[in-house]
Image 1 (cartoon, rainbow, N blue to C red):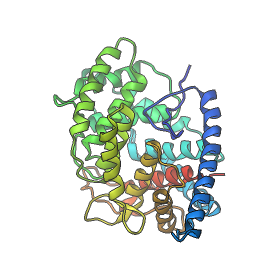
Image 2 (cartoon, rainbow, N blue to C red; image 1 turned 180 degrees about the horizontal axis):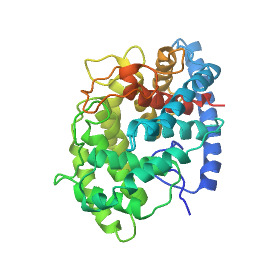
Image 3 (cartoon, rainbow, N blue to C red; image 1 turned 135 degrees about the vertical axis):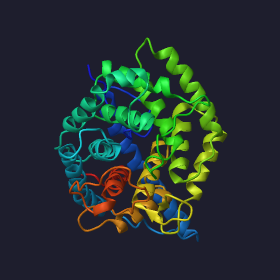
Image 4 (cartoon, rainbow, N blue to C red; image 1 turned 120 degrees about the vertical axis):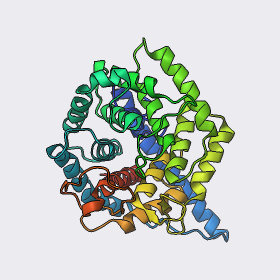
Length: 368
C-alpha cells in the first residue's frame, strides 16, 4: 500500500518524516487551527506591547493577497512540469520535485487540488527504472546522489510505494557515500547543484523513507556518519545554511547545534525581508522561498515577523504572469532548449524558484 508524503513537525511536506494519510489530515487540521490561534495570540500580544509604548508594524501581507499570488503562480509551474517530458526523457529536480512540492504544499495547507501528481511521479519512476542496473552498481547516474535524493523525494511526494526501483536508489546512495560521511553533487551548478549539505540531507531523507528491512542496518550506519559530517560542516552560502538547519533538525542534533544553525539562517535575512543565494548577491525568490520553507519545517510559525517579512518580499517580487524571475548563475553543460516557461534562459532556475515561493506562501495560510 502506498505510503503518504512525509511530513515535518509543522505538517510541511518534508522528505524527512512520515505518517498515515488519515492521521496526516487530522493533524494538519489541528495544526492549521493551532497556527491560527497562535497567530491570534501573538497579534494580541504585539498589540498590547504597542499600547505600552513599543510600536510594532502590522503584517503587510493579507491572506487575500497571498491567495491571489498562489492562484497566479501555480499554473505556470504546473505547465512547466507538464511540458518537460516533451523535451527530455530524464528526471530533473527543477521540473519534477520542486513543482510537485508546490502542488502538495498548497493542497496540504487548504488549497484546491485539481491537478494530478501521477504523471510527474510516473515520469520520475520510469527515468530511474531505466537505470536500475546502474543504480545497483552505484554508477552511471547523471547528477549522482543529488539526482537520486531529489528523485526519492519526488516519489515520496506522490505517495509512491517502495519497490525494486526505490530499493536500487537506496543502494546507489549507500554505495556513493564519501568516506567523511557526506554525499556530494557531481558538478557545481549553483544553486541547485553545488551544496554537499543539501545532497547529504536529501540522501538521508530518501534512505530513511525507502530503505528495506535488509538495508536498514547499513542505512542507520550511513546516517550516523552523515550526522557527524553535517554537524561539523561549514556553510558557504544560503542553500548550505538552510539545508544544515533542516538536516540537523531532522536527524536529531543537540539543541545548541540546531540553535547555532538557525541563528546563521536568521542573520542572513536582508532589509527587504528576503534572502540571497550568496553573501554578495541580492534577495531572490529561490533563496527566500527555500529558507521560509525550512524555517517553518523546523518550527517557525508563519505569523513570526521574520516569516511575514519574507512573505512580503515574495509578494512584491512576483511578476504579473505569476512567476518569479531568478537569473541563472550556472554555466550551461547541456544544450539549451525552451520548455515554454517564463524568463527564457533563466527558466530552469526561475521555475524551481517559483515552486519554493509558492510552497512558502501556501504555508502562510493564504491557500483557499
